[in-house]
Length: 525
Image (cartoon, rainbow, N blue to C red; front, side, top):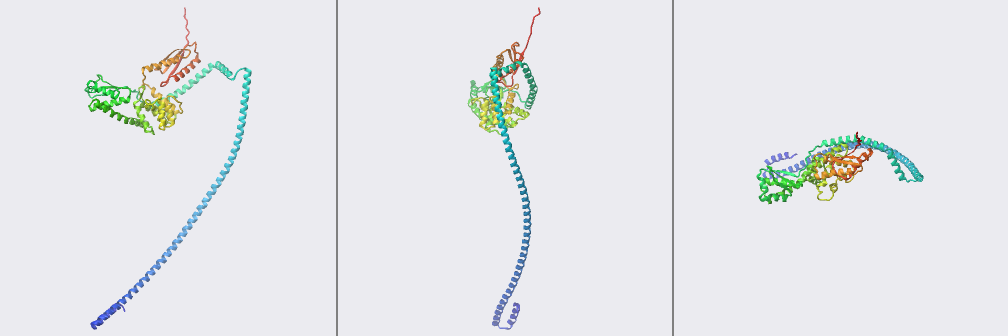
């Protein structure tokens, strides 16, 4: 009997029973319903528990089955991997065995070769000792022979050698002169032409202006009234300007400009910029002049680095310390015989790189050496010594390549050139310095050099007259024909050229022409 049926029966009985009994019955029925409900829920829970157990068992069995499949599959894969590993191991073993076999063969061959080499070395050593013994015997025989000859002839070895050379020179002097002349002509035909071609190509690649630095600079004025303001009352302004800048000011009748004169390029540049600043400002008096001068002086120091950086950039030279770059900028305000040193260095750099490219030398090294070859002139007024030595010392201080240092130090032949690049720098420096218009000489030094050339030529025996021509590029020497023959003429030209090279310093080359003339004169009566 379920709870609903009990409930309906209770309701029916309740309608016929008294109230107290009805209440009792109701309570009993509720208790019975509760008990019935408890057991009903218990049955349902047990049923659900059985269902859950069944589901769990099924899931467990399913998982167990899947696990078995996974294990089997893993075992198959492991077997396959193991088989592949065994195959790989077998292949590697085969390779190792093959390599080992080859190494063993090579080791055997090397041992055999070493054994052969040892035998060959022993044989060579025996032969060397035998040759040394033979040399000693020959030397002893030669010495014995010399002694015997000295006894027979009553002459020492040196005396006999001198007599023999004198006889050979006497007997074959004409032939020797002819052969020397012939060889010289052959060499000149090829070497001069090749040298001219290479130099022409190098110079053609860099054709610069030939303007020399002047000692005078022109400053433009807005009007002629400005001249009076620059001069000042009783010359006060112009005197203050000259004392402050160290540069002379020339005021003449030329309209719209004045001149400033001085040998120091940097001072002249600072003076020009100072005067331009004063003209632009309009206030010109001693205090203002000094103030403007100091401002321009400070800005010029910064400008040196810019000049150096521009030179390095234009020439394509890289890897120089900043101190070296600043020294290169200083060269902008240095001159040599009127030629600007910075322009000369850049020009030498270009010419040297072109020559190096034609001759197959190191272009990068030559270019850097060409730019730095006169770096010593930036500080030669501060340090004792030649600018080549000073430049080499500066380069060493900043760890420049030793080859470049040799190029700097040897470009005036103060030390021996150790490379073809150093010789190229010598040639490029001479080409840049000696081209027309590059430099100017004072009249005194020019005349002195010509006199020295003529004096050296006249100092040789047999010379009648000598003349320096073509601005000292050639010396023409006239000899007395009765004292100097053709052979001595050739020798004399070489001796004079050698003496000029030793005793004089000059840019470019000096040609020595020895002229021998034979005249026969008679009078018809």
